Image (cartoon, rainbow, N blue to C red; front, side):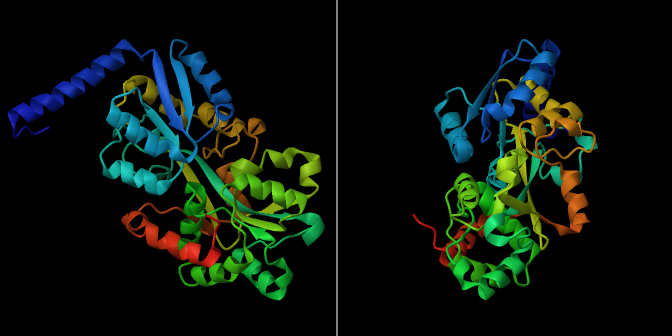
Length: 350
């Protein structure tokens, strides 16, 4: 480090020394994780982490779609807040990194992870969940549409499908990311396809009701459904006899659930250890045991509830068929205009 202002450099060196001293002393005794994953989904991870770090008490705070809002409020008020954030919503991650609130931690596991899984310094991917199509087999037959273009064509050919199709409202982080990724992948005609689907679709606030209503026949088709919410259900014979699913061949959105240590963490060493663990083969296996989609290729496949990232690529034939959530400035500056245009087409209930 080249010191131009002595006092400033001394302060930086002091901070670095403090961090190194903390790490020599070992992890703190408590760790707070703010997440949009339920505590049940964390069970396998916590058991594995506890085996390695038995003295660290981990508190999982499931905040749904309010992870970032709660972190900002708690941090500003000075109460005990997150050390580690694990959540979706790429635009929220853009915002938090832009505000300088992420610790730029270089994990020793990072070199083994693909470039797309590290969208910003200190930000890593927890899981890579696909957004898929689901359909009611008794209503549609053995095979449903496999692309949004095919679904749009089906809507035109069968007007009776109007009101029998659903997707999640684009204000929800996963749905917003899936729509943004798919439109980015289909720049030429993506909005034209959605314009055909909008009037025939009844959006839901969350994915759970879509899955249930496709199973009961209230809906025939659901699209941009989170695989993490679906795949464990598909293991139930009675459910899979009724509900079919497919990847989306004109762009299957892969929505990363991201994670990072926050800069004002009270337990930064423990947070780093958890992040590191989640990037290992064992840690990624526990991610899959909780129902999310691991992306290391050396996980224990026999323990995974759903699919792996490699399964998605193999089924699609190439990574070029994946619609990625591109985290660039447009995602923030054009977010409201995008949501307004989507709402004008799909007219979600308020």
